[in-house]
Image 1 (cartoon, rainbow, N blue to C red):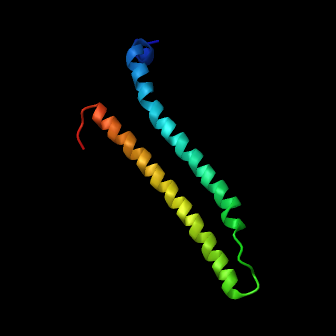
Image 2: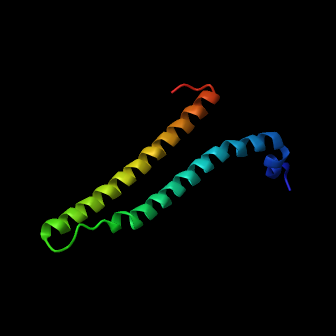
Image 3: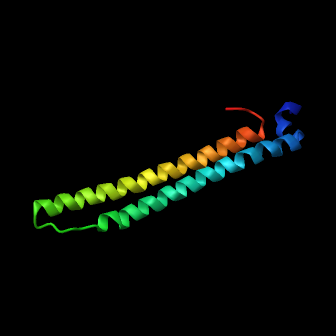
Length: 101
C-alpha cells in the first residue's frame, strides 16, 4: 500500500487536530437537535393541550390561534438559540485562527 493512504495515521498530530476541530461543531449539532426534539415534545404535549372549548366558532378559532401562536413562539426560540450557538462557534473559530470577518 502506498504511504499516502496512511496520511492521517502518519501525521498523528495533524490528524488529532483535525478531529478536535470537528468536535465542537458536532456537539453544536447534537445540542441543536436535542433542543429541537424537546421543542417538538413541548408542542405536542403543551400546545395541543390548549383548549378554550368547541361550542362556538369563536372558541374554536381562539383555540387554534393560541395553538399556532405558542408553537410558533417555541420554534422561533429554537431558531434564535441555534443562531446564537452558531454565531458563538463562528466567532470563536475565527478569533482562534486570527481571521477577520
